[in-house]
Length: 478
Image 1 (cartoon, rainbow, N blue to C red):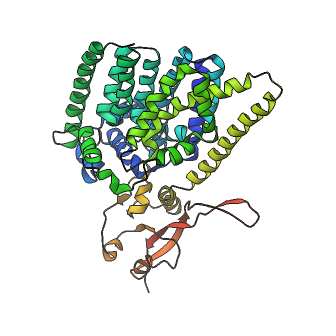
Image 2 (tube, one colour):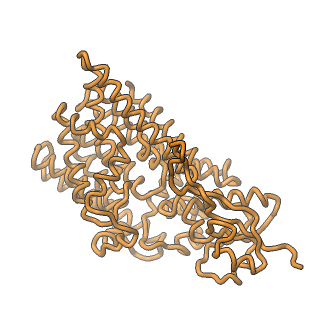
Image 3 (cartoon, rainbow, N blue to C red):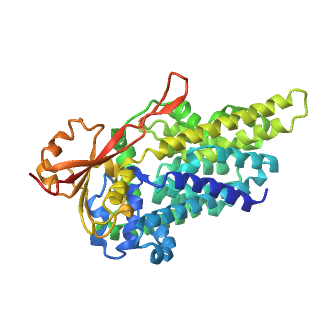
């Protein structure tokens, strides 16, 4: 199967995820807002969002700068419709990730036959999380776009390219990747002895100096102080273990929760593939060790190990290929078994997409407000914390409306806005009462995803109760 077909197929599935779920969560906000500001405000840094809402730790601007440069030619046709620019920005990021994934697909040639590579592609497109995340402006995804090339250089034994891409991924975007990529280099230098220690060390020092120097020079200007963002993130999350404030999971969570969800039903084929093809064991081992070591950190999220998914799919694909090549009496049953696992994956992906579609009530609320009041030339809108965290970005704003996300305002202060987006689950929610007694009224509400349940007919249903209410200042009082 030609690599161009793989690229097109992966891109199509990636875009399906994007167009069904075009909005973003708070974790993606820094990079997305930074791209917005680079495109709209350019060198007028005083208007940048990060100076007003800096977040807990600083992040690098290098990823947003790259996306903004690639998106800049489209600003002339989309500047009056910012939401279309959000699509363009995410498509560009998706293209970078899919390019890396296609490079990885091509480099599998030295480890797998054509059939296994085809099955790797099939398994990948049936899974939900990887291609869903591929267009999301998370630091992990910027790093992923580089790491996929690092893997490809690893498979192709391109020592210098592996070291340089690894250094930039680690020191600019995600410092924890030093575990994964470090394990790969240690294996190649000391166990397999495919790389020389001297060359790796020399290239590593040069690449590290270049990556840190570039980050410090660029990011210090944007943050208005001297800093190395990923160094501060490493200190905050790992040394101080402050990331645990966002929740913790048991040591084995990645193995009993994250990986089964990310890889889906075909996960059970992974061990078989390792016994069939011994060549791929050395590819999988560093990735498994990375997950084990990284499990020590209490705060866990699936996106933290997303880099490992394409590699873990290799033994799964090997098993699928081998079972389909069997010519025994019961081989038909095994083929049906493999197809049933993929069917389960597709069902899981469909359900996950349906849930995700309803999981951005903030964006839906703001768009609904714009639709309700599309003839108003100007208005002031206050966006509460919940709404801001669940879908709203500056790409959704409409000029010349004024938007405000200031926290901890009194109800009296909030009543001065023309419109409010307020988290609430019903008209009778006590959180609405103070607003309704201050010259504000309900104009609409939006629903959001709140889990699944099985009804009396044993049909899977989705709970989507009201999540955000749209309030407006009463035009006239009696």
